[in-house]
Amino acid sequence: MAEKTERIGFLGFGQMGSAIAEGLAEFSPDVKDGTLRMAAWAPHGDKLKKRIEDGGLPVEICSSPRELAETSDWILLAMKPDQLAGAAEGIRDLLTGKRVISVVNAVRLERLREILGDDPRIQYVLPNTPMKVGAGVALFEEETGLTEDELARAKRWFSSIAEVVVLPGEKIAAAASLSGCAPAFFFMAAEALGDAGVKHGLKRADAYRLAAAVMSGAGSLLAEELKAGAHPGALKDAVCSPGGTTIRGVSSLESDGFRSAWIKAVDATLG
Image (cartoon, rainbow, N blue to C red; front, side):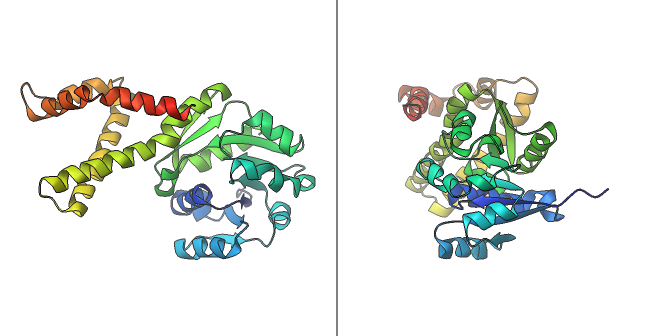
């Protein structure tokens, strides 16, 4: 029997919502075979239309939050935390039997139930923007209002664009600092490596391409080696020949407080 076609409606379509939609459009088998359709509403209709058209996305535009809620099987909440209560107020009476995925930062399941009521079945997911290219991380809160089958479907959709990690709610904030904030730290590192390359005669575009390729390759290697129980330090050691160039660079980073700087950055995100 063919699987029922379902529609997921994005309430909000900013950087995160559009990143998820772009990733699903490109990588999700369910979107490609038509069993998962996408729709969206956002306060600024012109910007929403431009995002969809520029990305060539298979996303239908709804004229209001109520139209979105009425015509969608799933609702994906993707707005700023201070906008959530207002957005929910206008559709709360339409949420009976709906499945809701919230990617609103720092608003966990208990608070979502206070805002949305007890009628919808809710899952809190904290994503990151690399989902746009199918290489994200999706933190699923362990406690959920979804049925087992619904949870499996939600994980399947996100698994097509992200590494799905299930965590207790109290661990989400710390994990989010790594998955949600750290991409900015890596972009800063890539920019710094680009500057270093330019300093030593490389064209900036070439330096950035090298930095991106090295980060991507090193990340893929680390992910594979971790499956076999490897330690990141062992991979670092394997690149460092005695008296060689790499160990001199590592020593310089250590003298400048490289590790402590990254740890302090994560500390700062947690307030």
